Image (cartoon, rainbow, N blue to C red; front, side, top):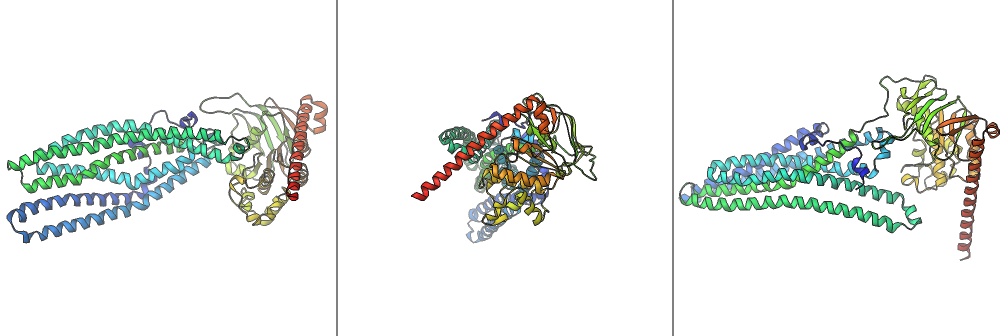
Length: 618
């Protein structure tokens, strides 16, 4: 099991079972009335079941012993009525608790999803998605079943056992004492079972999360696995993780089997001892035959509540672990939050300023050196600034800081003179829009994807954004702009996804447009068309563009050179070529990379042409 999944968010000191499960109460409060009614119904059903042996005792010691068979009908009808009442009460218990559990599950799932949306990107960098998925699905499903079934039966069965013990002692204190004393090993083993089973249950649920992560990674990376012929390697890795989970599940089953052994053995031994003692007491006249039947009938009624303690305890400990895992996420600190007294920008113009900005990546295990180390840069309203630098210089990090995907660790970034940390995240991201190099689309229509940042946008806004991004191909899709793209947009090509991501940023109509190499997957001709259309947008919008191609640099009014976490030169492209050796080296590197990309694209284009010709010949 990966340490990454087990350590992320794990609290150093684990609370007790009661305290851990009690934290669910705020979510369960609206459903508690029906759950209490379900408990009352179940308890009444248990009490009704315990009344039947008393009727049997009266029947045996009365009409049957006195030789009056004509008087048995009243006890028989009473037993029938009690049996029907018990069935009705059990049905009521199920009816009362059926819906509350699902509502609690939905409430907790909504709270978890809202928390995940609110947590910063740094949290999602650390947590495997499979771990989060298993918490949102498997763990909450466990909690729902425990609320609807486990807690009701656990409370009711314990109360039924206590009432039954009182009745047994009332019938015969000797037999009752034997029954109680013989039950003590069960409670001792139950305590031992908790400490053993809780650890194994936690490991099992963590390993299940790791397995979900492995499946998700394999599905998302299926093209890479197939292209490199690494399907067998991925399968072997998965099989190893699945085998670890299987071993843990066997360990869980062995723990459960251990408590079931005692839960089945102890009652049988107790019944045998009580039978010997009961026959002797009846033979010596200390109890009647009816009381002996009443005792064993009562003990039989108590058998299921006693035996059920095993699986109810295991369900409770599974729920405790599920609650621990759920609250690990809920308790995670939101490090990027809205200010207590937010400011607003009355008349936004789009002046973006970086003032002595520092940034380093941090997590619970390590603190990295500053990647951005005293960056100063000013973008005037309506200006287009290209940001260039060698690979790993921190260009993408700079763009992420503008919308507070990460927060600066030193200095500040201002928008129209206001520190962006003094704006609400909603307001900030209303003034800014981003297009990433790795274009992610959602499993929704083209329309919904493009208007994601401005859902109130009109058809004209949609058409304009698609036109600027040269995304006219969407009108040829089966349902046009209402066509639903596949998961992450993988049904489209890389260039098509990038163009839709660019259209999404343009459609938001922000004051500041941040583009992180949004044209890398486009061919030369399409790139030229997009750049020409972009000039219309950039004429009135402040833009920060990470450039990986010399052609992208040409879009900019000025160019900023990022070197060792700082801006070492700012100016027009031609001026920097004349004055900066490092800038010339960077541009030369970009040109070489662009030539290699063009050669590769031409090769792929020729390969497709040759394939088409061969197909036509055949």
